[in-house]
Amino acid sequence: MSPAARPVPAGYTERELMVITAGREIRDGETVFVGMRLPLLAFAFAKRTHAPRAVGLFENGIVRDSPADETLMTMSDTPNLPGAVWSTGTREIMGLLQQGLVDLGFIGGAEIDRHGNLNTSYVGDWRRPRVRLPGSGGGSDIAALSRRFVVIMPQEKHRFRERVDFITSPGFGDGPNWRRRVGLPGGGPAAVITTLAVFRFEPDTAEMVLASYHPGQSVDRVRQATGWALRVAPGAGETPTPTAEEIAIVRACDPLGFWTR
Amino acid sequence: MSASKVVTLREAIARFVPDGSSVCMGTALEAAIPYAAGHEIIRQGRRDLTLVGPISDILFDQLVGAGCASRVIAAWVGNVSEGLGHNYRRACEQAVPAPLVVEDHTNLSLAMALLAGSIGAPYIPTHSLLGTGLLDSNPRFRTASDPWSGAPVALIPALAPDVAIVHVQRADAEGHAHAWGTLGVTREAVLAARRVIVVAEEIRTSDEILSDPNLVLAPPGKIAAVVHEPFGAYPSPLQGCYARDHDFFARYHTDTRTVEGTRDWLRQWVLEPADWPGFLARVGAARLDTLRAKAPRPSLPVDLGG
Image (tube, rainbow over all chains, first blue to last red; front, side, top):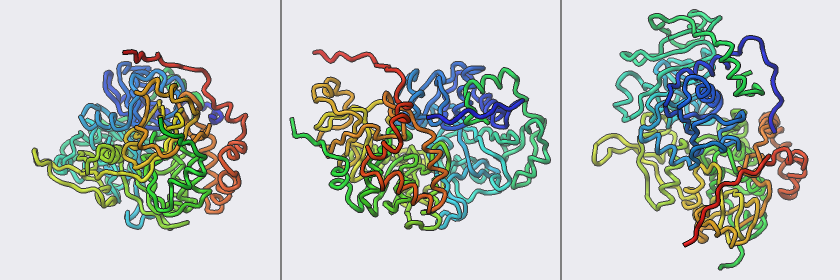
């Protein structure tokens, strides 16, 4: 049974903006490791707009070249199978990822640091954690093995840390050469999309820098919600405001507003 | 043809899931989770289990909250549509109701560990895990150099659980089981496990099931018991049968915030009902009807003529 529909706000919500911004990261024709929650909608949005030829992989074993007809609360909801182009298992999907065939993966995070490492496992020392988070799921694999990945998460100062307590999903480790040194084949994080801003990574330092702040935010407000001395990329400005048409498409993908309101 | 393996769920759990066993469940990720079997394990008061599974949704949280588990081997434990699992947190952070050892995995590493188990290989190398904290928090992982290229690899040791419990759409009395929809690590898990309990939505004749042996999940030697338990994967979804009951997960998340809340939840939903039909009666037939598949969507039959 589905929850009741949530009221439709005027304008757009924070999460609708995040979905649209994330959807813009998908290029037409790419193979995308979709994952859960907001990326499910970002994939559906991109398919209905600028990336109609994108292909989506789901780690439960599903491959789709069209979005599901109904809102998904989990990737294994029954509406995700009709219209699939392949239904197999986790091992096969992860095998494609490990072969380097995934262009873009999406990951959520509880904590992130200035080099884009994500923690979804333990707050505090892992031997005696203050908070036990749910764990990797497929996030660590996507971070290790996809050609590039995009992080979607809420931004609060305590989540944006100089260094995370535990690396669940590897970003750039401690700097530019770390991934090669430890043997990670994937390209690492390309962008971080938060409730306040979009960040990208400076090639020379592998450091997360502010690329754009969302409408209504400012460089200062983003800095206040970042746990290190955040630098601003040259030419950083406002994240493009969603158009009425884009908002309508996201709402059609999530009619009850479960994920976006 | 061998004898019937059909038993009640009570008997299957009593015989094949003793205290201290390693039990693989939730192999299709968020779908086809054997909740009926999980509830029976709690009712029988099992202790010291090792729970093995990629995601498990709220099943492992329930078993941990009921004190049945001492170890979890998983990629993720929580409540998929709601977030954190309160009982899992309490066990890991405060040893309430009992201490819990966790062997952290990723979905890839758990799939590969079961794959290794299923093919009788000692381990499988991967390029995932490198550089992560999981190499510390799960002491069973090792790193090595690829003997050919010299590049770093992580080694994932095989997992061979004592028993896998899978929920399938249909099976015959001898345990030939048809499963379809999202399978996750199901095929690897049933081959890696020493024995398998099949919980089936429907029992059909062997002639019917063996009309498509390609769809059969595992050879008969792996199957220890067959249990007929309609809606046995509720509140998770089962392709072709019923949808996920999202509200049930939301209410579980609210109701189990505290130790007392968990105790009440377990009493109401698990301990007071004598069996799974008793639980389903509390859920209510009207609610179950709203979840049933809306329209059939049969596939093209295959022709096995020779």
